[in-house]
Image 1 (tube, helix red, strand yellow):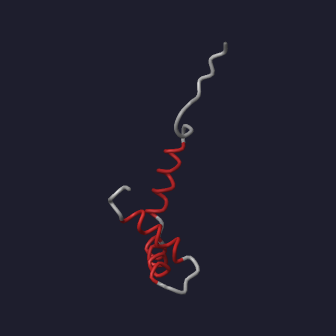
Image 2 (cartoon, one colour):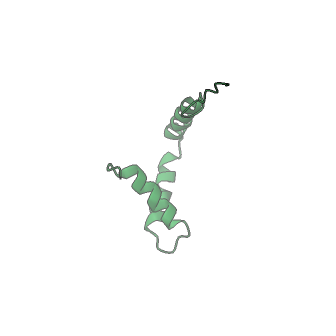
Image 3 (cartoon, one colour):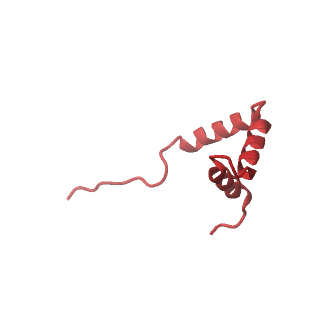
Length: 66
């Protein structure tokens, strides 16, 4: 019988790539404009991506995990 070991979790290097992207986003000069655009989309009833913007904001703002 052959033992096959299966790795669990994310592939190696994924967390480092996430942290690198996060740092780039935080340090980008237009990051406040992006956040403002997401807020405007979430509050605009006529915006086509309102639900996605609301979900994004709620996922980031809500401290309660369900």
